[in-house]
Image (cartoon, rainbow, N blue to C red):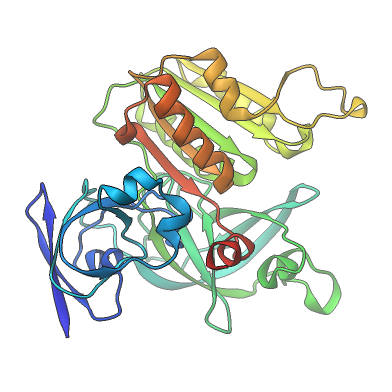
Length: 348
């Protein structure tokens, strides 16, 4: 059994199998609607149901406001049709040569960038180009079939290995392997399985709006890819990056971000630390990173915001930028790093 889902305003129609989500059905049909984490944590896939019955799952009640739920909004990464549906959502059409694929990769280097951040460099199959947009992510498929999602930290035009920034989550099945020692340690030349690229978190190049990049922790990884892409194609729009961490050491490629100010015209970098200690000797901005943006740019009505990091930061930025700074809701693009712990909280 399958159900037909009609998309407004584009007019596209696609089939969704019983038990499949609206998002998965769209992707299978070659249509890409906005999405990020696919776990109901980032609300990037929010859209309105105009007609039809569906199982929303528990995530929308915890992620969307009462007013949004009352107006018929839901999360299409969670919604499973129970009848034919008509939905309203913006549509992102990726290049036809960008396809979601499964492929083997080989570990060629593990390099610590901070005490709890590892750069994992992965060799792609020779002679088999892997195409993606700067800002997208891949899933690492573990032996038990479970998945871990990580953004690619290099721009698509760069030939060579993929680069992932892995933050250690103690007790995490995959990150303990990446950071482990002895028999549990990831080995050079180890083979991993990936699937991707995923996500609609990428620069809207047709726009001329000033760009505000907002990252926390390893949310810097996709932002790094996006800035490298901007440098490559010669983006002339004003761009500012606010990167936040609890301690200065969390800004693990601070020097690189400062270098971009010299090579990308119109680019500014503002590091923000929320929990600096006296021994850090920190002389820069302090507080919550999204609030630093609000202090510096109280009017965001003419800007685009690209936010990546912890779900709490992304949610607060989305809410406050729209409500207090005049940012159009459709000019906020996000990718929230939702861990298994976050997912468990949502499910509970």
